[in-house]
Length: 359
Ligand SMILES: Nc1ncnc2c1ncn2[C@@H]1O[C@H](COP(=O)(O)OP(=O)(O)OP(=O)(O)O)[C@@H](O)[C@H]1O
Ligand SMILES: [Mg+2]
Image (cartoon, rainbow, N blue to C red; front, side, top):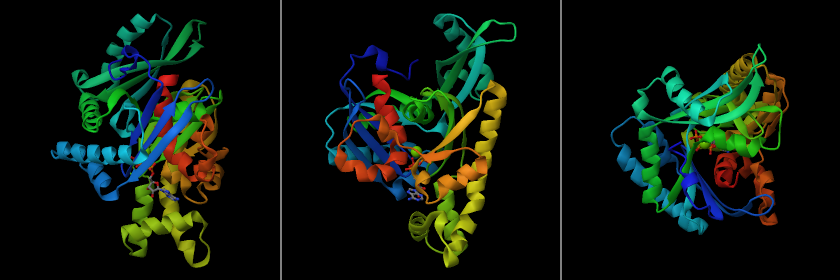
């Protein structure tokens, strides 16, 4: 469990959850209290140019330089949001991790740990020495013969990715106490009070992450490169307008345009349909593989703010669909009440990260 450093530390009372996305960094400062955690601060920094390059450059050698820039942005955000704590939990994007759910006989944690090292070789398309493996028991069941079984989530992250984030946080002056794949964080905050399986569709800028979860635990996941950025690009190309203008149009009108604006949804729906068919595939695979039904859908990430998306997804998937509201799991100032509708979906991962030490 070497990318979860929490266990060795004296638990602090406040933590930062820091979600470094493709086009933005989101940050929350949470305080442990008797009931729900309290939101002390939050901040958001959007930086299209830089962060777009950051992710496009993932495989290039200028990586280190971009990490410096990311750290600088994080510093600015920390300063502007006036947070006091320095202990932080950070996210690893879904596209950087390998996640597999395994059903295996019930055994001690020690034996499970050994079995996981062995199993990992089969499931990870990289040399085992170049990844860090973690596992998490997420359920119990019974096999056909009546023997007790356990469901174990196997998570592997390339060491290179872990080093990259450790480095960024260090340069920004933060003490990184844990790193977590974003699907685990959004599952924690969005499904912790629900024992029916939920499909979370996190539509970010560069990628869409899918997570099936219940009781706050991730069970099954997937990912596609069709996301908010693809919607903007299709508008820009189809209407022959600049990316920034397409981005504004998308945010203003969404799928709701009528008359002359009808064209907007005509352009965006094919992309959305690709995301939805991937969602359907993940739902079907989960249901078949794990004999459990997905009962509803939560739309998260900035893309969940696309006007009209929830009813469209609901109709296409035939499941109730709603926008994420991670703030419902926090105590927060009534001053921000008018903002949480929009902010909610964008902050799911950051809030889930910030809550990790309190769970
Ligand atoms: N009101 C809105 N309507 C439509 N799309 C929106 C709206 N607000 C934000 N978005 C889109 O959400 C996306 C950004 O979402 P988010 O902040 O979750 O991404 P990210 O975490 O930076 O990216 P990623 O998760 O892919 O790394 C952008 O594509 C943006 O255009
Ligand atoms: Mg994101």
